[in-house]
Image (cartoon, rainbow, N blue to C red):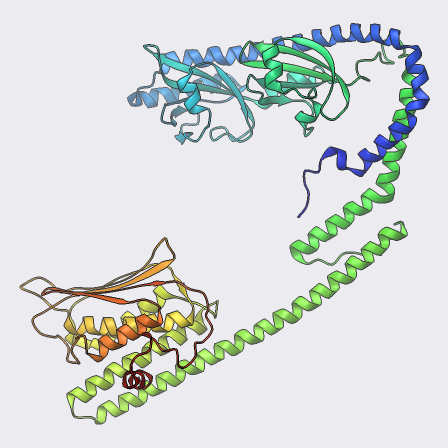
Length: 589
């Protein structure tokens, strides 16, 4: 996994520069000690100058935030919080944003987190904002920074003012100003790292881009603690171990603050427009050494490592082969490139072989399911031929029910070889095909429509086969017995639902007429259909629950959705070991 946020002190260039800095310390130590008093006086003057710059920046930021607070307060008094006046509120917000180019968006938030009106004309829900309960519990002006707010969708500083009614907060008006409005303040003092933050220590603006704020702060102190201490200018060592000059100034007491951070070099006199710094030459020697070290490390190692990282990421993303080593690489790095190229070619070759094997397996598996489906349909056709020769209605009906069971198995195999994932099927689509097929078998004698509701559930064949056979028996019985009862229209309902605990539930329910609509064996505790239903339910690791009264019949089978299981031993029969004659009967189905 790529490390996109490597700590600063772990970088090779930083470590090399630190070691070089330590090596150069004795060289410049004598000059620094000789001019210690002079430097102290210069630093004192510089601190006063830096404090003036920070106060100047704070005044400019203060005016802009106070302007936003004043505008938000005026908008709150003008629009109110009545939902019936939402249209007028939206118009006021749109007009306000149109008249003030620096404003990105404005709106009014109700206590429940709904944005009653916004300058965009749309509605939003900010109930998940963690500061919302606190601002209604302790109403006060508040300012924060957001990278991607729900209203303006761009970095903004958000100024929030409560709307009060009889001493109680009834809403919050926010005014969002573009981030560039405040970046201009920091740009006026480019030699400093300039940040603005609120009383909770949240950084609002920063002039140092991706620089880590914690590494720049004084050791053992946070922005919130600096805000509580009030305005000050002082020297301290940062969390990264670098001595710095800090100047803290309030923008609005208790709400927003500004901090300027200077390095010791920036606080020393420069060469342009000032006297030449006394310790300048040791400093220049140190900087030159660091520059040479950085260029050497970058040219000899880092740029090749960056290319290797790019090649690795590209290979991981789209399997593009690396270009290999170049003549300007050091021998050690060239060996790494050659090794990676060899490994990449080996991986691609192995993956191609695996893909070919998988493709062949899928083709063969599809062919197996296709042939099984064709053989089962052939058996069904033979049964049709046999039924046409039979004269006894009972024999024809028994053979027809057996044919339905065979075709249900054929439907399972057809669904398997048509599925993208040959190992599992969509149970809902499978049961839908079975129900449609059984309706066709019922013919004109069945007048009750079938209501179906199937959730998207994937089952492996060791569960798909018994659930389809169970559904076949249950729906066949429902088609046979569904009918009108005392003038009430008949119905058949089939439902397969997924439950939160990893179970699935198949329910087949039908009305009961005075006599069976279709001929066949009766549904009784000792009937063949009921025995088959219980056997198939046992294969699913469940029990078939049957509820019956004068008007309806309901079958419910609840089972655990499982992954693929190994084929059980022949002695491990459904139902927990039935009697020998029942076992023989089940095997002959």
